[in-house]
Each structure stands twice: as C-alpha cells, then as structure tokens.
Image 1 (spheres, rainbow, N blue to C red):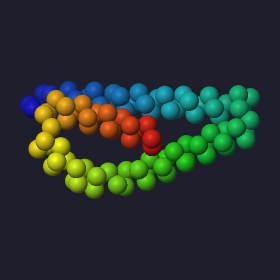
Image 2 (cartoon, one colour):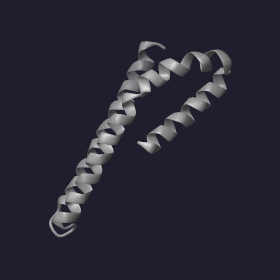
Image 3 (cartoon, one colour):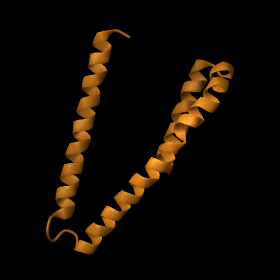
Image 4 (cartoon, one colour):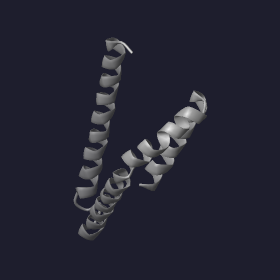
Length: 98
C-alpha cells in the first residue's frame, strides 16, 4: 500500500467521521428542541445512549483476547477469501449485539 492510498483512505475516513458528527449534532438539536419531545422522553433517549455505550465498552473488552486466541487457527486453516467473509460476518454480528 503506497502513501497515496493511505492518504486517500485517511481523507475518506475523516469525511465519514465528520458526516457522523454532523448527523449526531442535527439529531441532538431536533431531540432537544422545545416541543418535539418532553423532558422525560429526552431523558429516556439519553439513558438508552448511555446504556448502549456501556454495553459496547464491555463488548470490546474481550475482543483482543478473542482475536489472539482464534486468529492463528483461522489464518492457517481457511482460505483467504473465506476468512475475510467470516471476519466480516462475525464483526457484523458483534456490532449488532453491542
């Protein structure tokens, strides 16, 4: 991978991150806008976000040990195409669960 690919990936990643922040800002503005939600509903929304953040943090605690434990087996016994597909599916499931 040369430096132009790395630079391109960095720029794309930065754009996606800024886009996500913008969506979050607009989302928070509309949720906090007076009259759209009551204080209780906005508080419940905040509780859901806090619980989801804690759950995601706990889910990520075990990931490094999971990867160190199972990567050598899958690296040795699966073809590259199937290993990439499996990794994508497992990460999608773990993301959905957290």
